[in-house]
Image 1 (cartoon, one colour):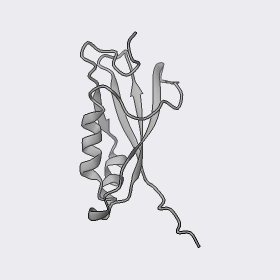
Image 2: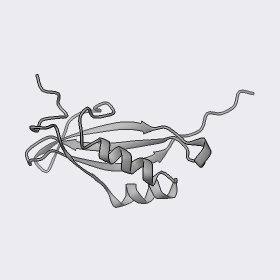
Image 3: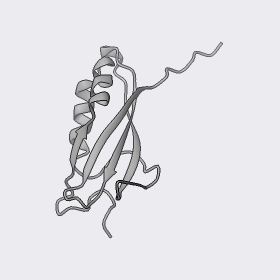
Image 4: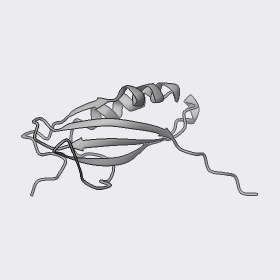
Amino acid sequence: MSHPHHDGPAGEAVALVTDRAAQRAKELGAGEALERLRAELEQPPRLGWRIRTVTEGGQQVEPYPTRIEGDAAAGRPAINVVFAYAPAPPWPPTVRIAAVVPEDPPHPEP
């Protein structure tokens, strides 16, 4: 049985970052971390968990959230990332990183 994230012969997908997501990652000091995630999303296994499947322009799209750990030494908070996976057609499958949101830090106990 094929995993839903690697429909292609080698399981590769084309992964892109939207302009807004790239800008937000840069503002948060997470540009390099987002680029590593983008590269990782081109190869199986994929990260995150499917929220649902929707139809967008006649094509099935699966939105997924995932998390990039923070880096205290670099002063970067953990960030939540939402990406959309479109299996095929078209070939190859595509991944669009669409949102980057900083995670709220935990509140200290009183």
